[in-house]
Length: 246
Ligand code: ZN
Image 1 (spheres, rainbow, N blue to C red):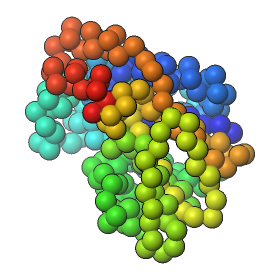
Image 2: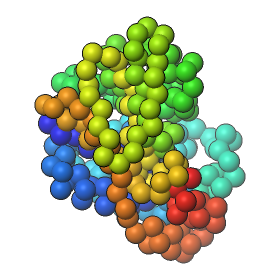
Image 3: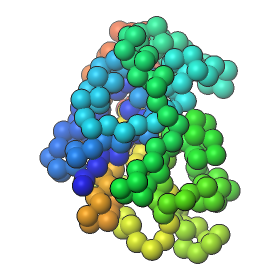
């Protein structure tokens, strides 16, 4: 099986389309896994949900998904994110609200032995797995060798060389990670709002036969998404960050 692993699509349909086309060319659409934040920031939440639901989809909820359906409040969001979240909540169809409300916080796939969540296993909606302490806590809670996380919008692998001995590596286009003896935390980066300085959409492919995870970057028409954000009256700071990849 070749599975496209996506996270943080953030209502950016142009980016999602290009990622799915790229995954199709690489024969990686046996299933699609989404690590949450379907909505928030971007201009096309309903279109993103409709497109993803056409695939064999496994998904978890992210903080922006929960905020959009009123399951958490936006007190901890910065003002621009909170404004975009309010706009998204007003824009969602009943069908989209029902789908987002039904998402679980943690995804388990018995066949591959992989667990996935948006933030971390101990705080699925909120925690960024970036510090050593957060990574150690994540490994502690893993009852399978590999976990996927999102939320940071930064493609990253953290390898447990030995107990308490961790190595983190940022990943760029074309990098591949072998699923070997060491336990791993893998982050595919963000589809709809990359934050590692590379504005191209980021995603990963889990190849269960080859036992690898490939990381890919895909150019997309950023100006198209920006024009829709402008028309929707979304905050300027959110529009501009897309072209910087920050
Ligand atoms: Zn996000």
